[in-house]
Amino acid sequence: MSRTVVRGGLVITAAEEMHADVLIEDGRIAALAAHDSATAEGWTAGADRVLDATGRYVVPGGVDAHTHLEMPFGGTTSSDTFASGTRAAAWGGTTTIIDFAIQSVGQSLRQGLDVWHAKADAQCAIDYGFHMILSDVNDATLREMDGLVGEGVTSFKLFTAYPGVFYSDDGQILRAMQQAADNGGLIMMHAENGIAIDVLVRQALERGETDPRYHGEVRRALLEAEATHRTIQLARVAGSPLYVVHVAAQEAVAELTAARDLGLPVFGETCPQYLYLSTDNLAEPDFEGAKYVCSTPLRPREHQAALWRALRTDDLQVVSTDHCPFCFVGQKELGRDDFSKIPNGLPGVENRMDLLHQAVVDGRISRRRWIEIACAAPARMFGLYGKKGTIAPGADADMVVYDPAAEQVMSAATHHMNVDYSAYEGRRVTGRVETVLSRGELVIDQRKFTGRAGHGQYMPRATCQYLN
Image (cartoon, rainbow, N blue to C red; front, top):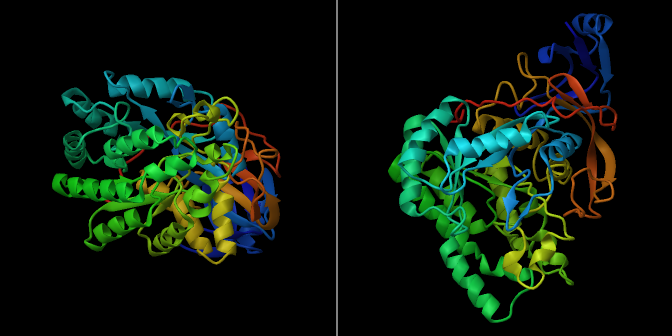
């Protein structure tokens, strides 16, 4: 039996903070004990490895429940592989990702899932799971949903956006929700009115409005709010829970808040880009705004206050990244003369934990809330809590030794994501990952990568633990 002790740190979970040493045995957390107690001293004496966390936080490994690695989109493919993307995640203190397997129109869910398993198998530096994107809702794929839930793929994403690619109409969405209501799955929704947006895109291009900033202008906040409202009502009709992804607009937050005030099982996530970036970035000159094209789009800065407030009040439960990187050179440039051809997506899997710690430093959220929205809530939402998202006996030893006082400047020159720009270039933040353990194995050791492709294991998931 291998034994590791992490000693001297302030252990922070979503529930509590305590000065404690942590004993790890065979990849799992075995026990916690007060610093300098006889119990803790005994562990140290008999340990194979002792990690000194004095003056540091000891926090659960982050759970990023929304990534797109090696994802085909708009005639190209997101630039991070499962190898490079999970390595970058580890550098940022994230030890579990949930990526999106895609069913293509005309294919079975199984065919899409198998493709993603093949991409990820033996490539990942950290543990991973899959959601399933439904692009083609029909009798056969609805039946397949039940089997996927049984084998641990317990969440299904649908789109009211991207007609001709991922779009589902209201009838298809309702049927998928009804199926999920029966099998325990969680429906995830990209909520924007894609039919109306396509009209606005066409009209903008006809007026010669081709710059990246028009991407944000045509994808109106009201069309995000409308689709959020509509899919909440469809979920009510179906008796299904609903999780709305990448919420950006204050009007959409209001729809979620109203539903939750009625006691409905409606949940929402936002992403760091909506908390820290805005339409000012989309409007950067010389096509630089293309770096910030994602969907839902960045909103005017005044929307940020509503997002932070909803994170404090638990009307938004999760911060994920929607990490979907495309290089500026050769990929974002595909839309140089037509904003609608810019691949949608930003890099961020390495930045999330640090940006949210900055919110602690700035007084926007508490330390425990930081861990709640980045670790515990995503683990609960997607059926991993107990193994992931906490530091407690029996949990996987996914842990981060975090230096809350270290200062860093975010930059493409120093990040580990396979993309040629940073969405946060030049941003100063306080706090930095120092050491990362994944199931007790050192992946980052004092700011050196010691992990390996293939360490990461596939994680079958239980159903949403907020509904049990």
